[in-house]
Length: 200
Length: 200
Image: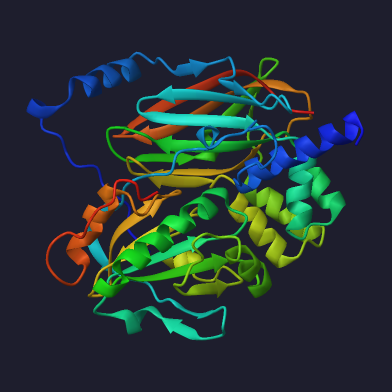
């Protein structure tokens, strides 16, 4: 196994002022938040939301159910199985360590969606994979599914990033808030995107 | 073509762009390269080199490649898939890097995850320049765990002693000056090769 990058210890005399400000923001519990889409496709209306927090950028773009359906049918899913996932409010998600003060470490089990006053976890990748096996989805198609998702956990050094699908499990047309969390330098950081809409 | 059909075609095309990251041709430029996530321009140095995990796979011509047989040369091992948008976008720059530095000993092994020969072969025909480095097939994703790959694309730099010394998680523009400077010390011969600012 290739080891992860460790953050270099910073001496008290050379801590950048920006890092001090970020640490202060973290201590008083200020999550970065965004609400309005930064971009909307003129043809489809698919919206992209983005939040930047402590040198990390998270963006999510609506995927239409028929786009998701086509992708997985082309990867070997039967249309009924693909339709289950296509109807689960799927976003193309990009998480990037732009300039965090070291490596970031995230686990999707720490992320939440909030809807109508209730908090829920994102559907787990393992649960999807079990479902596909029970439905008889072929091994190559399940492999494609697994690697097309945003990884369930990963570490990114500054400059590193990844892209993948993220399903909320909500019905098309739902509205929700997404709370993303990651660790950096021993601190939990939070980025929140409010009032996200699932495409229909 | 009816309006409804036209809309459906546009939605479908957008889906291909989002899912495959392909340029959208003939759409009036609704989705541009500026809308796609930026490729990274750096390699991350591992804190301590570690012996590279085994890698023995066949290429598209059925020839077996073993990473250990490349001892004495720096190697970039790239894990990818044809349906992975950043994988597709970074591949031409990897080929340009290879063509620029193969005479100084650089080797590249690109490991396709979970796909068959026909799929990979059809994809490479769309690339400009088409890759001339070996494209290896790992149809069951059997190598990923040993290499610690969590998401695609992920690339590793192996030094002449067969040790992993660097990595790039997420789509990367391999022929950018910062990456060329990172790789240069691992190549045979002295000095830094010509770095072309417009090589992308």
